[in-house]
Length: 368
Image 1 (cartoon, rainbow, N blue to C red):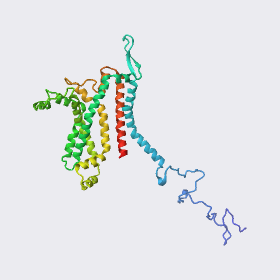
Image 2 (image 1 turned 120 degrees about the horizontal axis):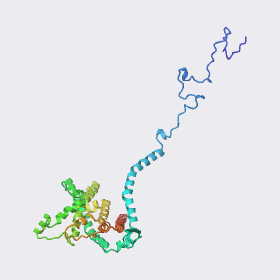
Image 3 (image 1 turned 45 degrees about the vertical axis):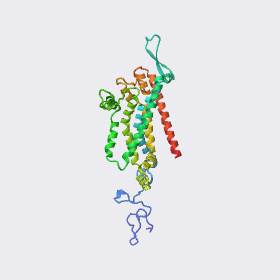
Image 4 (image 1 turned 120 degrees about the vertical axis):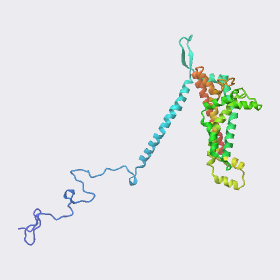
Protein backbone atom coordinates (compact mmCIF):
# COMPACT_ATOMS: atom_id res chain seq x y z
CA UNK A 1 0.00 0.00 0.00
CA UNK A 2 1.16 3.48 -0.68
CA UNK A 3 2.20 5.73 2.17
CA UNK A 4 0.60 8.77 0.52
CA UNK A 5 -2.34 10.32 2.28
CA UNK A 6 -5.67 9.80 0.67
CA UNK A 7 -7.54 13.09 0.71
CA UNK A 8 -10.80 11.23 1.21
CA UNK A 9 -9.78 8.63 3.75
CA UNK A 10 -7.47 10.85 5.71
CA UNK A 11 -3.85 10.52 6.93
CA UNK A 12 -2.58 6.90 7.62
CA UNK A 13 -1.69 5.94 11.13
CA UNK A 14 2.08 5.51 11.32
CA UNK A 15 1.76 2.65 13.80
CA UNK A 16 -0.74 0.48 12.01
CA UNK A 17 -0.63 1.88 8.49
CA UNK A 18 -4.36 2.15 8.39
CA UNK A 19 -6.01 5.32 7.38
CA UNK A 20 -7.28 7.61 10.12
CA UNK A 21 -10.67 9.15 10.47
CA UNK A 22 -12.04 11.02 7.51
CA UNK A 23 -11.84 14.49 9.06
CA UNK A 24 -9.65 17.21 7.70
CA UNK A 25 -7.24 19.17 9.80
CA UNK A 26 -8.65 22.69 10.33
CA UNK A 27 -6.65 25.26 8.54
CA UNK A 28 -6.79 28.91 7.88
CA UNK A 29 -8.77 28.44 4.66
CA UNK A 30 -11.84 27.16 6.46
CA UNK A 31 -14.50 29.70 7.42
CA UNK A 32 -15.71 29.97 11.02
CA UNK A 33 -18.80 27.98 11.87
CA UNK A 34 -22.06 29.81 11.24
CA UNK A 35 -25.08 30.07 13.44
CA UNK A 36 -26.34 26.66 12.21
CA UNK A 37 -23.61 24.90 14.28
CA UNK A 38 -24.67 26.59 17.48
CA UNK A 39 -21.50 28.63 17.89
CA UNK A 40 -21.26 32.34 17.65
CA UNK A 41 -19.03 33.85 15.02
CA UNK A 42 -17.37 37.20 14.85
CA UNK A 43 -19.46 40.40 14.55
CA UNK A 44 -18.76 40.76 10.82
CA UNK A 45 -19.56 37.43 9.20
CA UNK A 46 -18.91 36.63 5.59
CA UNK A 47 -22.02 37.29 3.47
CA UNK A 48 -23.80 34.24 2.12
CA UNK A 49 -23.82 34.29 -1.70
CA UNK A 50 -27.17 32.52 -1.75
CA UNK A 51 -28.83 35.15 0.47
CA UNK A 52 -27.27 38.19 -1.12
CA UNK A 53 -26.12 41.27 0.76
CA UNK A 54 -28.84 41.12 3.46
CA UNK A 55 -26.33 41.69 6.25
CA UNK A 56 -25.40 45.15 5.04
CA UNK A 57 -27.01 48.00 6.96
CA UNK A 58 -28.44 50.95 4.95
CA UNK A 59 -26.47 54.14 5.24
CA UNK A 60 -28.14 56.91 7.26
CA UNK A 61 -28.09 60.61 6.32
CA UNK A 62 -26.54 61.58 9.61
CA UNK A 63 -23.83 64.01 10.35
CA UNK A 64 -21.06 63.75 12.88
CA UNK A 65 -21.78 61.48 15.87
CA UNK A 66 -25.23 60.50 14.59
CA UNK A 67 -26.70 64.02 14.58
CA UNK A 68 -28.96 65.24 11.74
CA UNK A 69 -27.20 67.05 8.95
CA UNK A 70 -27.12 70.86 8.84
CA UNK A 71 -29.29 70.86 5.72
CA UNK A 72 -32.13 69.01 7.39
CA UNK A 73 -31.89 71.28 10.47
CA UNK A 74 -32.17 74.40 8.34
CA UNK A 75 -35.09 72.91 6.45
CA UNK A 76 -36.95 72.17 9.66
CA UNK A 77 -36.22 75.68 10.96
CA UNK A 78 -37.57 77.28 7.79
CA UNK A 79 -40.62 75.04 7.88
CA UNK A 80 -41.36 76.01 11.49
CA UNK A 81 -40.85 79.71 10.74
CA UNK A 82 -43.16 79.47 7.74
CA UNK A 83 -45.83 77.71 9.80
CA UNK A 84 -45.69 80.43 12.46
CA UNK A 85 -45.65 83.38 10.03
CA UNK A 86 -48.31 82.11 7.64
CA UNK A 87 -51.33 83.06 9.84
CA UNK A 88 -49.96 86.59 10.26
CA UNK A 89 -49.40 87.13 6.56
CA UNK A 90 -52.81 85.68 5.71
CA UNK A 91 -54.54 87.98 8.21
CA UNK A 92 -52.42 90.98 7.11
CA UNK A 93 -53.28 90.34 3.48
CA UNK A 94 -57.00 89.94 4.14
CA UNK A 95 -57.32 92.84 6.59
CA UNK A 96 -54.84 95.33 5.09
CA UNK A 97 -53.59 94.61 1.57
CA UNK A 98 -56.92 93.60 0.04
CA UNK A 99 -58.88 96.64 1.38
CA UNK A 100 -56.16 99.04 0.24
CA UNK A 101 -56.06 97.55 -3.25
CA UNK A 102 -59.86 97.57 -3.42
CA UNK A 103 -59.97 101.23 -2.32
CA UNK A 104 -57.45 102.15 -5.01
CA UNK A 105 -59.53 100.29 -7.60
CA UNK A 106 -62.80 101.81 -6.39
CA UNK A 107 -61.39 105.35 -6.47
CA UNK A 108 -60.90 105.09 -10.23
CA UNK A 109 -64.62 104.62 -10.94
CA UNK A 110 -67.72 106.72 -10.52
CA UNK A 111 -71.44 106.32 -11.05
CA UNK A 112 -73.24 108.37 -13.69
CA UNK A 113 -76.82 108.55 -14.82
CA UNK A 114 -77.55 107.50 -18.40
CA UNK A 115 -79.98 109.46 -20.54
CA UNK A 116 -82.93 110.71 -18.53
CA UNK A 117 -82.02 108.52 -15.57
CA UNK A 118 -84.62 105.82 -16.13
CA UNK A 119 -81.97 103.10 -16.59
CA UNK A 120 -80.33 103.76 -13.23
CA UNK A 121 -76.72 104.73 -12.53
CA UNK A 122 -73.85 103.14 -14.45
CA UNK A 123 -70.36 102.58 -13.10
CA UNK A 124 -67.82 104.10 -15.49
CA UNK A 125 -64.07 104.54 -15.39
CA UNK A 126 -63.18 108.05 -14.28
CA UNK A 127 -59.41 107.87 -13.80
CA UNK A 128 -58.24 110.56 -11.39
CA UNK A 129 -61.55 112.40 -11.52
CA UNK A 130 -62.50 111.47 -7.96
CA UNK A 131 -59.15 112.71 -6.67
CA UNK A 132 -59.60 116.01 -8.49
CA UNK A 133 -63.13 116.33 -7.10
CA UNK A 134 -61.96 115.70 -3.52
CA UNK A 135 -59.06 118.15 -3.75
CA UNK A 136 -61.30 120.71 -5.40
CA UNK A 137 -63.91 120.54 -2.65
CA UNK A 138 -63.50 123.34 -0.13
CA UNK A 139 -65.00 121.23 2.67
CA UNK A 140 -62.34 118.55 2.21
CA UNK A 141 -59.51 121.09 2.27
CA UNK A 142 -60.95 122.84 5.33
CA UNK A 143 -60.89 119.52 7.16
CA UNK A 144 -57.09 119.46 6.99
CA UNK A 145 -56.95 122.97 8.51
CA UNK A 146 -59.07 121.66 11.37
CA UNK A 147 -56.63 118.77 11.81
CA UNK A 148 -53.72 121.19 11.82
CA UNK A 149 -55.28 123.16 14.66
CA UNK A 150 -56.14 119.95 16.48
CA UNK A 151 -52.53 118.72 16.23
CA UNK A 152 -51.21 122.10 17.42
CA UNK A 153 -53.24 121.71 20.63
CA UNK A 154 -53.25 117.97 21.10
CA UNK A 155 -49.69 116.80 20.37
CA UNK A 156 -47.83 119.17 22.77
CA UNK A 157 -50.34 118.57 25.56
CA UNK A 158 -50.28 114.81 25.02
CA UNK A 159 -46.51 114.45 24.73
CA UNK A 160 -45.60 116.93 27.44
CA UNK A 161 -48.21 115.69 29.90
CA UNK A 162 -47.29 112.04 29.40
CA UNK A 163 -43.56 112.73 29.85
CA UNK A 164 -44.09 114.79 33.02
CA UNK A 165 -46.37 112.20 34.61
CA UNK A 166 -44.02 109.35 33.69
CA UNK A 167 -41.03 111.20 35.18
CA UNK A 168 -43.00 111.84 38.37
CA UNK A 169 -43.88 108.16 38.66
CA UNK A 170 -40.23 107.22 38.09
CA UNK A 171 -38.86 109.35 40.92
CA UNK A 172 -37.87 107.75 44.20
CA UNK A 173 -40.30 110.00 46.07
CA UNK A 174 -43.36 108.66 44.26
CA UNK A 175 -45.84 106.67 46.34
CA UNK A 176 -48.68 104.36 45.27
CA UNK A 177 -47.27 103.95 41.76
CA UNK A 178 -49.50 100.99 40.92
CA UNK A 179 -52.60 102.93 41.86
CA UNK A 180 -51.71 105.93 39.73
CA UNK A 181 -50.73 103.73 36.79
CA UNK A 182 -54.11 102.02 36.93
CA UNK A 183 -55.96 105.30 37.42
CA UNK A 184 -54.22 106.87 34.42
CA UNK A 185 -54.58 103.84 32.16
CA UNK A 186 -58.21 103.05 33.02
CA UNK A 187 -59.76 105.68 30.67
CA UNK A 188 -57.93 104.07 27.74
CA UNK A 189 -59.76 100.81 28.44
CA UNK A 190 -63.08 102.55 27.75
CA UNK A 191 -64.03 102.51 24.03
CA UNK A 192 -63.89 105.86 22.25
CA UNK A 193 -67.59 105.81 21.50
CA UNK A 194 -68.51 105.37 25.16
CA UNK A 195 -66.00 108.02 26.20
CA UNK A 196 -67.47 110.52 23.72
CA UNK A 197 -70.98 109.84 25.04
CA UNK A 198 -69.80 110.36 28.63
CA UNK A 199 -68.24 113.70 27.77
CA UNK A 200 -71.29 114.85 25.79
CA UNK A 201 -73.28 114.35 28.97
CA UNK A 202 -70.66 116.36 30.89
CA UNK A 203 -70.74 119.12 28.26
CA UNK A 204 -74.53 119.52 28.14
CA UNK A 205 -75.55 122.57 30.21
CA UNK A 206 -78.84 121.25 31.60
CA UNK A 207 -77.38 117.86 32.58
CA UNK A 208 -73.72 118.32 33.45
CA UNK A 209 -72.62 118.89 37.06
CA UNK A 210 -69.35 120.27 35.64
CA UNK A 211 -71.13 123.02 33.70
CA UNK A 212 -73.30 123.77 36.73
CA UNK A 213 -70.21 124.14 38.94
CA UNK A 214 -68.57 126.39 36.36
CA UNK A 215 -71.64 128.60 36.14
CA UNK A 216 -71.79 128.78 39.92
CA UNK A 217 -68.24 130.03 39.91
CA UNK A 218 -69.00 132.67 37.33
CA UNK A 219 -67.37 130.81 34.43
CA UNK A 220 -69.48 130.49 31.33
CA UNK A 221 -68.25 128.32 28.50
CA UNK A 222 -70.19 126.70 25.67
CA UNK A 223 -68.50 123.43 24.76
CA UNK A 224 -70.57 123.04 21.58
CA UNK A 225 -69.84 126.48 20.11
CA UNK A 226 -67.46 127.07 17.23
CA UNK A 227 -64.82 128.37 19.67
CA UNK A 228 -65.31 125.56 22.19
CA UNK A 229 -65.59 122.57 19.87
CA UNK A 230 -61.87 122.08 19.28
CA UNK A 231 -60.86 122.30 22.97
CA UNK A 232 -63.72 119.96 23.85
CA UNK A 233 -62.50 117.29 21.42
CA UNK A 234 -58.87 117.74 22.51
CA UNK A 235 -59.98 117.21 26.11
CA UNK A 236 -61.75 113.94 25.21
CA UNK A 237 -58.71 112.66 23.30
CA UNK A 238 -56.36 113.56 26.17
CA UNK A 239 -58.59 111.78 28.65
CA UNK A 240 -58.53 108.65 26.49
CA UNK A 241 -54.86 108.44 25.46
CA UNK A 242 -52.79 110.22 28.10
CA UNK A 243 -52.55 107.22 30.42
CA UNK A 244 -51.61 104.90 27.57
CA UNK A 245 -48.59 107.03 26.65
CA UNK A 246 -47.66 107.44 30.32
CA UNK A 247 -47.39 103.66 30.62
CA UNK A 248 -45.13 103.50 27.54
CA UNK A 249 -42.80 106.22 28.86
CA UNK A 250 -42.75 104.76 32.35
CA UNK A 251 -41.81 101.30 31.04
CA UNK A 252 -38.98 102.87 29.03
CA UNK A 253 -37.74 104.77 32.09
CA UNK A 254 -37.67 101.58 34.12
CA UNK A 255 -35.20 100.13 31.62
CA UNK A 256 -32.68 102.94 32.21
CA UNK A 257 -29.53 101.73 33.96
CA UNK A 258 -29.79 102.85 37.58
CA UNK A 259 -26.00 103.04 37.96
CA UNK A 260 -25.99 106.02 35.57
CA UNK A 261 -28.53 107.81 37.72
CA UNK A 262 -26.60 107.05 40.89
CA UNK A 263 -23.37 108.32 39.30
CA UNK A 264 -25.10 111.54 38.23
CA UNK A 265 -26.45 112.00 41.75
CA UNK A 266 -22.98 111.53 43.22
CA UNK A 267 -21.65 114.14 40.79
CA UNK A 268 -24.19 116.62 42.16
CA UNK A 269 -26.82 116.57 39.42
CA UNK A 270 -30.34 117.47 40.54
CA UNK A 271 -33.62 115.82 39.57
CA UNK A 272 -34.29 118.18 36.66
CA UNK A 273 -30.76 117.75 35.33
CA UNK A 274 -31.03 113.96 35.54
CA UNK A 275 -34.44 113.97 33.88
CA UNK A 276 -33.56 116.14 30.88
CA UNK A 277 -29.89 115.21 30.40
CA UNK A 278 -29.94 111.47 31.13
CA UNK A 279 -33.41 109.96 31.21
CA UNK A 280 -35.03 111.62 28.20
CA UNK A 281 -32.06 111.06 25.81
CA UNK A 282 -32.01 107.38 26.77
CA UNK A 283 -35.72 106.91 25.94
CA UNK A 284 -35.56 108.77 22.62
CA UNK A 285 -36.83 105.76 20.67
CA UNK A 286 -39.99 105.66 22.81
CA UNK A 287 -40.49 109.40 22.34
CA UNK A 288 -40.27 109.04 18.57
CA UNK A 289 -42.66 106.09 18.55
CA UNK A 290 -45.27 107.94 20.63
CA UNK A 291 -44.92 111.05 18.46
CA UNK A 292 -45.36 109.00 15.29
CA UNK A 293 -48.43 107.18 16.59
CA UNK A 294 -49.93 110.42 17.88
CA UNK A 295 -49.59 112.11 14.49
CA UNK A 296 -51.17 109.17 12.69
CA UNK A 297 -53.98 109.00 15.23
CA UNK A 298 -54.61 112.73 14.90
CA UNK A 299 -55.04 112.41 11.15
CA UNK A 300 -57.64 109.70 11.76
CA UNK A 301 -59.80 111.86 14.02
CA UNK A 302 -63.36 110.65 13.55
CA UNK A 303 -65.26 109.17 16.50
CA UNK A 304 -65.19 112.11 18.91
CA UNK A 305 -66.34 114.83 16.46
CA UNK A 306 -68.93 112.49 14.94
CA UNK A 307 -70.58 111.90 18.31
CA UNK A 308 -70.20 115.56 19.25
CA UNK A 309 -71.96 116.59 16.04
CA UNK A 310 -75.11 114.87 17.32
CA UNK A 311 -75.35 117.31 20.18
CA UNK A 312 -77.81 120.18 20.07
CA UNK A 313 -76.30 123.39 18.71
CA UNK A 314 -72.98 121.73 17.87
CA UNK A 315 -70.68 123.53 15.44
CA UNK A 316 -69.30 120.21 14.15
CA UNK A 317 -70.56 119.53 10.62
CA UNK A 318 -70.63 116.26 8.69
CA UNK A 319 -67.43 117.25 6.86
CA UNK A 320 -65.56 118.73 9.82
CA UNK A 321 -62.55 116.39 9.40
CA UNK A 322 -61.30 114.53 6.28
CA UNK A 323 -62.44 111.19 7.71
CA UNK A 324 -65.90 112.58 8.32
CA UNK A 325 -65.90 113.88 4.74
CA UNK A 326 -65.16 110.38 3.43
CA UNK A 327 -67.84 108.90 5.72
CA UNK A 328 -70.40 111.43 4.52
CA UNK A 329 -69.53 110.80 0.86
CA UNK A 330 -69.94 107.05 1.26
CA UNK A 331 -72.98 106.68 3.53
CA UNK A 332 -74.91 109.91 3.02
CA UNK A 333 -74.29 110.69 -0.66
CA UNK A 334 -73.56 107.08 -1.77
CA UNK A 335 -70.52 108.28 -3.73
CA UNK A 336 -68.16 105.41 -2.99
CA UNK A 337 -65.59 106.44 -5.56
CA UNK A 338 -65.21 109.89 -3.99
CA UNK A 339 -65.05 108.35 -0.51
CA UNK A 340 -62.32 105.93 -1.62
CA UNK A 341 -60.32 108.74 -3.22
CA UNK A 342 -60.58 110.84 -0.05
CA UNK A 343 -59.43 107.87 2.03
CA UNK A 344 -56.42 107.29 -0.21
CA UNK A 345 -55.47 110.97 0.04
CA UNK A 346 -55.69 110.82 3.85
CA UNK A 347 -53.45 107.74 3.85
CA UNK A 348 -50.91 109.51 1.63
CA UNK A 349 -50.81 112.51 3.96
CA UNK A 350 -50.27 110.21 6.95
CA UNK A 351 -47.47 108.39 5.10
CA UNK A 352 -45.75 111.68 4.24
CA UNK A 353 -45.89 112.90 7.84
CA UNK A 354 -44.63 109.54 9.13
CA UNK A 355 -41.73 109.57 6.69
CA UNK A 356 -40.85 113.16 7.63
CA UNK A 357 -40.83 112.42 11.36
CA UNK A 358 -38.77 109.24 10.90
CA UNK A 359 -36.27 110.95 8.61
CA UNK A 360 -35.89 113.93 10.96
CA UNK A 361 -35.25 111.74 13.99
CA UNK A 362 -32.72 109.58 12.11
CA UNK A 363 -30.79 112.65 11.02
CA UNK A 364 -30.79 113.99 14.55
CA UNK A 365 -29.51 110.68 15.90
CA UNK A 366 -26.78 110.56 13.25
CA UNK A 367 -25.57 114.04 14.18
CA UNK A 368 -25.52 113.24 17.87
